[in-house]
Length: 258
Ligand SMILES: [Zn+2]
Image (cartoon, rainbow, N blue to C red; front, side, top):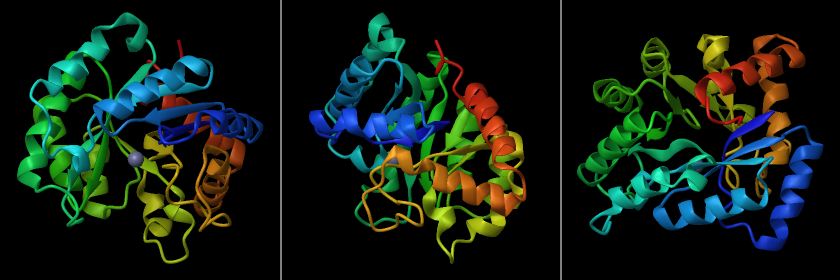
């Protein structure tokens, strides 16, 4: 199984071994280690060097990190992609996006040009875009389409039915986190509208631990709790779900297996 979205950049050196061993033991053999800034992108790429069989990178600047970017940030991101050693570890541009709900984030006007520029980089480097979007899901998907993005993954999707339909009709993917295991989550019903060939799952480590680990710091080895719950909600067998997820991961992130 692949954890399509985790943040391990804050994980201390000595803990990373343990976290990856635990993940493998839980059946999670590939983790897309996701950056939120240029600095974390470098850390993530270094971590991928230590675990070439299990870690892949998503490199990008998250909407939260779009304020006060130094000039030339986009050439620095592009430089990572043109470095052959780095490029072969990079599975996606992410996480990037728009967040319209959290007052702690920079304004949408600040986020927007950084989002669009990174989508252009995803298009020219032929990589999928991993999108963080809160309250702006449909708008973000429209911008992806307008920018010519072929593959996009709406990570930790928490939007509504209308946005979901638009994303799916655009050919993009929906990634579901441990939130679906929370009793009051609207995703428990909405999941039935996600075509099985567009579904991905993630932990979003270190956040959002699934039930029964809710409240603990999340880690990739907790991913199976989310898979089991989705299989139950969709009334399909776990092997059936796992097989679909494997196909979808390969389709959404073609560079993940090399
Ligand atoms: Zn994230």
